[in-house]
Length: 300
Figure: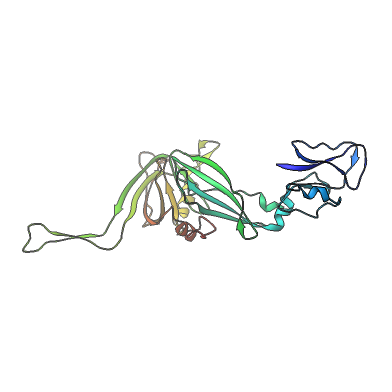
């Protein structure tokens, strides 16, 4: 961009002298001087010809740097952004698609709010996502910063909003797709009528696994019973769960029925049998919000 440039050398100035009306500036170096403010603007020509030597107060649309030297060397707009930015939105879409979905909203009240962590528990394996960091400035979405992330993992995971379990040992998921149908025979027809009622269509299944804790990447067999009791309480807490596997399958489910265990071939290898039923669409913003996995449903 084209900016006006100021020459700062030996001396003590309140305001520096304008020496070049139009130059391409890559570096600014301050040496052997006492500088109160370093302020840079773009698009000043032809206004530079009538410049009265005063420095604009604060950050405007044409400001490119504004260093006040109040104990720091910050010359960017982050302090000004606190006053104009109301929130940060994290959006996501599958790479190659067009629709963005807002997954997380971070309110901005001070500088610390620009730095935060958010973990996307809803991502499926074998999918490349694009995530967008979007500031909301004066009520409108500002410039978007996009990152591409490939999601890939092994084995099975089951999680709710508070806990996540990695299930490795002897994990097996038997899946059923459910629909409501009926067969009706009549006297005058050789073949029966096929009746499909409503829009019912959901997955359910029976998941079997050996639940065992890990300590420093080693299975903790000796304290396995403590871990299994905690796992039982997790399964029975009534909260919606996300069940996912390494192939890209991803379901929003409720755990149903009793949760039996069988000892199997060894005392340390009791197998859980978990019945689950799909309770929503794991890709739908409204369903994820209702289940507590995201904190906004603005794109419901």
